[in-house]
Image (cartoon, rainbow, N blue to C red; front, side):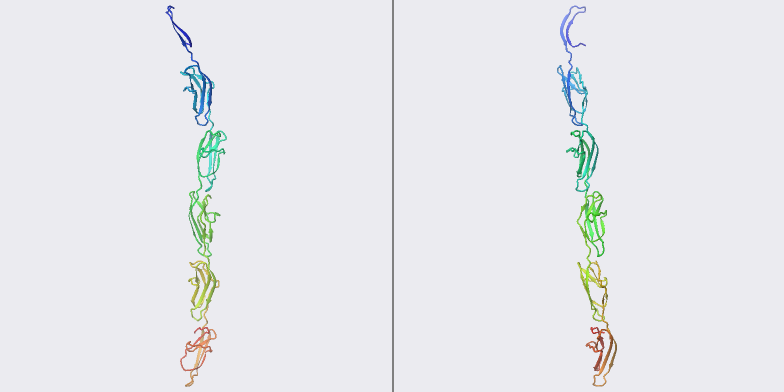
Length: 429
C-alpha cells in the first residue's frame, strides 16, 4: 500500500545491529489523463450509422491512453465512427487500465432526424381510354417540413403536398422524405388501371323488306375486359344495353360501343339500311276484244321503276315480267305492279280496267219466196235482225260476201242460202 515516491532500502538485525543499506527504489504514481474536449456529429439520416464522436485528451504516461464510449469496450483511437443515434458515455484511461476518467458532460447524445409517417395514400384511375387524368394523393405527418414526395421510388421528388394529377395507368412506388432530403420512407405500391376499350366483333344488319314498313335491323356483337358494354346506332346520342335494334327505317346509322360506365367509346363503320323503292304506274292502255266471244283484247302498263318489276292484271294472283297482256277476253281486270321479289306492290288507281266486247245482233226472222215460174229468178229472202251495232250487215252465202241492205235479197235463183248477220265491226253471229 505504498504511495508513489523514493524509497531507500536497508536491512539490520533485530536489535538494530549490523545495518546494511541496499538499493534506492522509486515507486511511480500513475498520472490520470485529462479529457480536454469531446466533439460529436449526429447521424445525417434516419436509421443511418454515420454519427461520430472524437475525444481530445491530455496524458503524461507512456505508452498512452485508450478511449471508450460505453465503458466496456476500449480502443486506442480517439475517434468513434459509424455511430447510430443514441446515448453514449465517454471515458479515457491509461493503457493498462489505470486512472479511468469520466467525461464531465456525459452522456453524449447523438440524434437522428425525425422521419415522417405516411398515414394514407388515395388514388383514382384514369377515367377514360387514352387520357391521363389519374391521381395519387399522399397524406403524411411528422418529419421535417416541408415534406417531399415521390411516386417513382425516390428517383425524383416534388414539394407538392403529396398531390399528383394527370397520371397515366401504371405502377407507382410511393416514398416520402424530410424537406432536407433525410429520412426517406417507403410507402405502398399504387397501381393505376387504364380503361380498356370494348372490342366490336361484328355488326350485321337487314334492310327494309317492303315499302311502307319499318322492319330494318342492326345487331352489334361486342365485349369488353371491363365487363358489360352499351350500344348506340345514332353516334352516341342515345345508348342501349342490348346490341339488337329492330323496327328501323331506311337511313345511315352511326355505330358506337362503350363500357357500361360510359368510358372508351369505340366507333365502327356506318351502317346503311336501304328500303325498296316502289314503282310508279304512269299509264294503263287497253283495247277491247274486236269480236263477240273473241280473246284479242289487250292491256299495256307503263311504269317508272328503279329495279326490275313485274306486272299483274288479276289483282296480284299471277305475275309477269312483260308489261303487255294480250289475248284477253271481255271482263274486269285489276292492274298491279311490284318489284321482282315481291316487294312494294302498287295498285292502279283507276282499277278496275274493264274490257268490253261488241253486242251481237239477233236474227229474229227469215222470210223467203220461191221462184214463181220456170226460167225466172224472182226468189226473195228477207232477214229481220235486231240489236248489235248498226248498220248491220247481212250475208246469204255463209259470210263469203256481205251487204248492208237491210236484210232484203231479191232476184234470187233456186238454191240453198246460208243466212248470217253481223255488226258493221265485223262481228259474226
